[in-house]
Image (tube, rainbow, N blue to C red):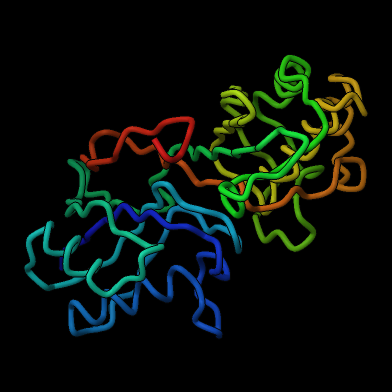
Length: 266
C-alpha cells in the first residue's frame, strides 16, 4: 500500500467548506469524486486542516492510501481532469515511512499552520475583490494592530477567539506569528500557530480591526485573551479574505511544497 500526499488549491466561494457534508457540495466531496473517477475505485482522503464555507486554500495538504501504481504527475493531471476550475491539485508525492517506521499523516505530522487574511481598506468596496477579500471602509492604523497582535504570541488559552461549536480537545495553542503588511489599499494579516480553533483567525482579525479603527486600544487585546470569554472579543469577521496558506512539515517527508507569498495571487 502506498501513501500519496497531494497539494490542493481552491477558491472557497460557492463551496460549503472543505469537509464532507450530506449535500456533497464541499471541496473534499469533489476531490474524492475526481479521485474515484481517475482511479476507478473509491479513495478516502485526510486533510491537514478543515476550512469553513467561503474560505480559500492556497495549499491544503491531503493524503490517501492506494495500491495503484501511477506516476505522480498522472495523479495531478488525471485528477484535475475531473475537477471544476475552482479546485486544482498542484502536486502529488509518495511519502514513505521515516527511518523509525513512522508514517506521514497530513494532519498529525503538521508542525504549524499559516493563514493569510486579505483585507481591502477603502471607503468603497471593490468588485474585483468580491469573495476574495474582506472589506473595511474606515481607515485602519497598521501600527496599532501590529502592537495588539504581539500580545497573542506564545502559548495561550485562546478560548476568547473560539467558536461555540468548536470541537478541539484543548483551547491552548502556540502562536508563532501575527504580522500585518500593507500593499496600498490591501492589508494582509499573517497568522501562524501550532493549530487553530474554529473561527479563531476570523475572530482575531475582527478584534484587530477594532484596534485599527481606534475603537479599542492595543492593550485591549491582552484583556480579551486573558478573559477567555468569547463575549469580550469582536464579532467573527467575514470569511471572504481568509486563506489557508501553508502547512509546515519536517523536511524529512520531502513534500514538494510551493513557496508562499503574502498576496495569495502571487
